[in-house]
Amino acid sequence: MNDLFPYRDLAAKLAAQTPEDELLLRAEDFPPELPDHLDFDGLVIDTGFRRQIEWIGGDSAPFTIRDRTFGFDGYAMPEGYRLFGLWLLHLLFSGRDWAGLNLTHERSLTKSFYASVERPGPSLSGLRIASHTRYSGYHHTPQQVSRHPFADPEISSPQRLDGPEDRPLFVFGWSETGQDRRWDIASADQLILAAPPPGLAAMAGLMIDMAHPTLGRDEINFEVPHMGIAGTRPFSVEARFWLPGSIAFPEANLAHVPIRRHRTD
Image (cartoon, rainbow, N blue to C red; front, side, top):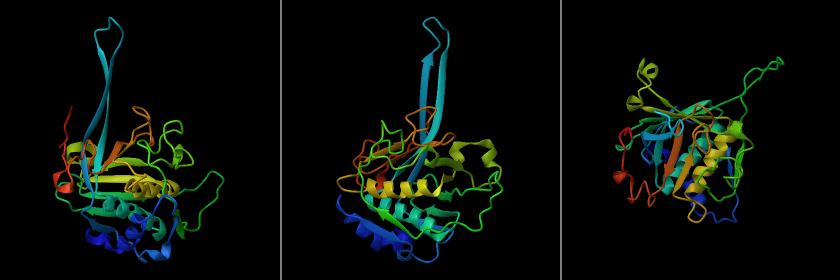
């Protein structure tokens, strides 16, 4: 899948994992440098998802209260999710603060996907950090995937995060200067994932496990805390990811992904 070919051998090892297997992915297993951008045709992003909740103000109230949240749908084949997860791990091993994917598939409405590592800043104690933390490895043991993987414990099992502060933040972006001030979703051509290192590592493991033939599932959903089960941090947009055969991705390949194209209902 375009320039993510350096991860092919690692993806093959992950694809062969049984639920009992453990695999240590080491920093030296990855290329020494991670470019600013890599081409990737294995992920399609549709930014047309909306969730609307409404209720009336009482039995005799002459009004209805409505709320709406924005979101996106991500589509990939199993191999695409494995490569995507490995790219997130490469970012953590590289010591970089961010990296980008050029989403080259013609069906993708979003053309750029960025991942950003949220690192601790100066504290009130006056303590300063001399350098970024570099990570030497990631220990992957396949886990069952729940539909709401980063939600509260009573909803999501197994738990993959230490706490809500490690949940991801997904936001839309605009490469054209000035478009970000309009917040016109139809013109958003970037999608950004931001999380602290434990959250990015959990996201990488989740993407790898989603593709597992027995532990994975064909749909996962990161709802926002104020209008859903949760899974993201506040102010995030909602994120949903699908595999072929799911209700939103019934076809067998990315060429037939049913793009919503900014539907407003």
